[in-house]
Length: 166
Image (cartoon, rainbow, N blue to C red):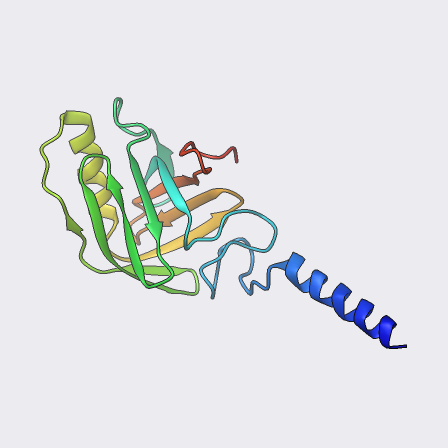
């Protein structure tokens, strides 16, 4: 009888571990900063490589400035911070995650001078990465969108630094 209880306890533990114990819903990473169970990357602790910009009332994706691809990324820390690269300069700031919203405080950045496309990308990102943003995580993709429709699309990065296939 004791052996059956141990076996059942181990099976229950394995089932809980397989589910990841996340409470997020609908692929948004709501409540816990994580992606929905079993579908991909969590919002926090993942390096997100910027792959596109969003614009318009009905956000439409647009390409990054030519020559700036693969240079910008961001990572939300479990400690309430965000850091990364704007394509030229690095940045760090505070990030509060609640439901499907991320609220960013002012970003502290380095102040290097970079060529045109990288500066263009940096300006677009600094215009978006402030204040309250809605976010959605679907599989290995992240969308951050401001109220006016401006936003960022990003892809979770694999351990070798390349964006993971979606």
